[in-house]
Image 1: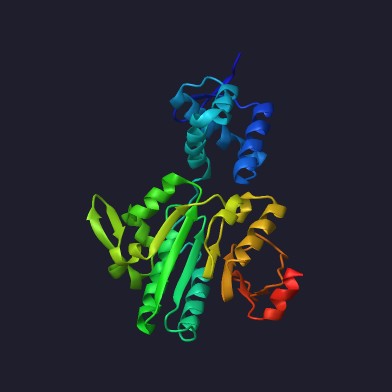
Image 2: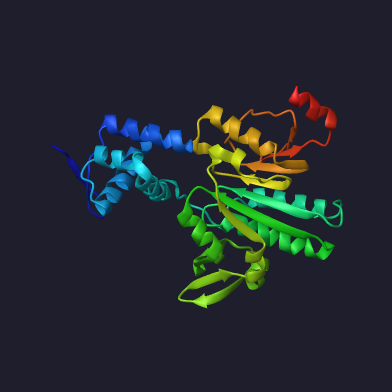
Length: 295
């Protein structure tokens, strides 16, 4: 007989050890995310509530629905949206964004006139991180006659739809520096704000599985911002992801990750930034270094 536990919304079946390991393995195989046992209740609630919505009475039945047939692929996409939505906000790490801003200001005076300054928000969620970079870029590059573009990627289609729309609750402004509030947003009523059209036109959002970066043709990035993403992966996979991101940086470009997300990681093409406030790397300019790395 199936045991049930009660949540604040409804009643879902209890996730036993065997089913937890099975779902844990499927999630890691398909997304790379390693869900620790401490998040078992989160997995149970997310699976259980979705099972109630689609009329599955057991985790085994729902698992078979997921892994079989074309309809399973559609259902998997829906489930991934539930399991991967993470908290975000504008300018979430002020120290990291201050570092990015300083880099942009320096770069604006040294790049060729026709350069398009490219930024990439990896694991962009609902877009606040990408739009934060766009605000920085928009305050710097037009004054130097330069263009910029920001790309946000995530595995969740639900958050990407929100990112493209660019609408947020008015309280999201609490995290935005005063100098951007008047020009970067406008009020659309019903306690909602919308990112200004000029900024949204500079931002592009795409669904990307971080395990399959080789299929995503994005290169020549000046800034790759990858915070609060790597913590969900095993250490060896973090290295693989970072190595792939390095190849997409222009010489002199920067890679920004979260503090403590990858301690003691090194790459022959990168120079670490010496700081206790940010974890960042600069891609070296030397062709000799690149040749050594390929060998």
